[in-house]
Picture 1 (tube, helix red, strand yellow):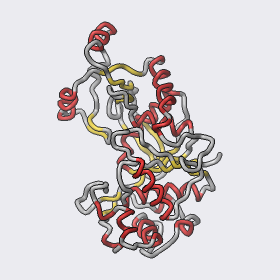
Picture 2: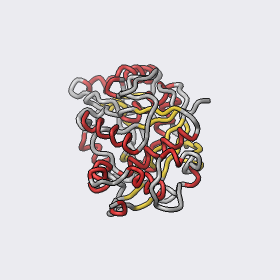
Picture 3: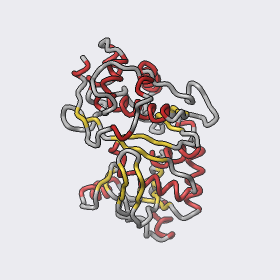
Picture 4: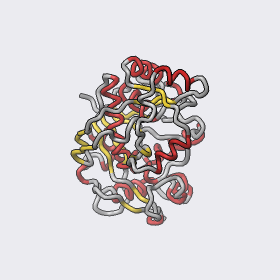
Length: 316
């Protein structure tokens, strides 16, 4: 079986160190297996996505020495490679789920959802668990509410535990209902990330997905979608996060750790790659290195199970 992985950045801001480290590890996983790497731009949220950020991210990846075999710039057999150009595929998946009775309209207001968020239903990386308020509505009730409000669509989560083997985090058991029924299409018509990524990964033949551990507890949602759509799920590897100086997940607000700013300060790409490899447990010393030099010794088992705190000052 050919290994097919993907880099799937969201062009809503500059690439920070956490993004770069995940991209490096995903690249190494595929290159170690002599597989193919897909670059997919996840710009389905048109309000936040900017084409200039897409170009910046691609430039940053190339500067780091990370290449890809298919993408919006190269083309390929599984395009288009921007989610904004794949809407028909998502609508087709929604139609199938609706026909199979796996979706229902949700009319809950923002105030109701805020109340849900403050109640002890449990949280996942996707937010508070939804208790199914609209699942039991009759057809007549749905028709009546639809006269005054356009609903979102929610997916019915199976009432069972989810077990899967994670290549980085080890065996996982996540209890049902794993966050509750979740939205796959918003009331404004925007397709939700969970549906889009499942449809895209399956359609593009992705066999391996490497991403941050913050998405681990949302994996059952994707597994349930794969199952409901009759699709084969990829193998997952969730790696520990990089944290900012404030102890929070590294994000675009940690300005000094964006790849672009480090480039502007004259940092060599080999120095950044070496730093990312060092904090990921791939090399014993923090020293400059090129991505291709890491391929032979790459092993997910070397990556620490605990998050690492960074601020970028070590590179200056």
